[in-house]
Image (cartoon, rainbow, N blue to C red; front, side):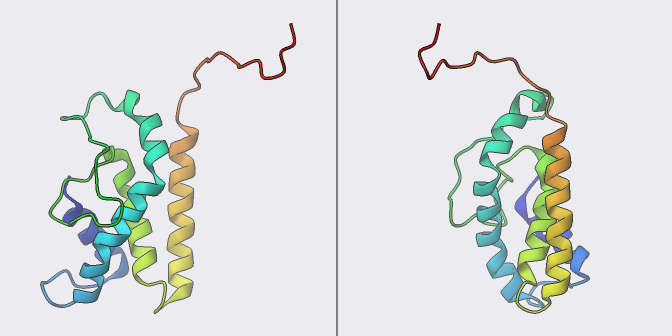
Length: 133
């Protein structure tokens, strides 16, 4: 999935036009906001990678931390594309409509929490930090 699709879905959530030139400000800011989202989701993405073996190609964790072009491939697992749409929509209207932004951000948080709760537990060794036997 390319980032342009995530941007278009965010614009659909907001009821905004995706025709070229209609929302140049949104389009310009979207690349920075998507990079920010990807940085925030790096750990969750790492936890989801083992379960995402059925994806067509392996996702690279190499991406620019400040700017992610809309023409670029979304660098995280596809399961995180829905929260990305909500996050992007929320951040795009944060200055113009804070109430809508807050509602979308709440939906984004719920979406991420749902994904986190579906990650299966793994058994790991516990480190002995106190030196007790």
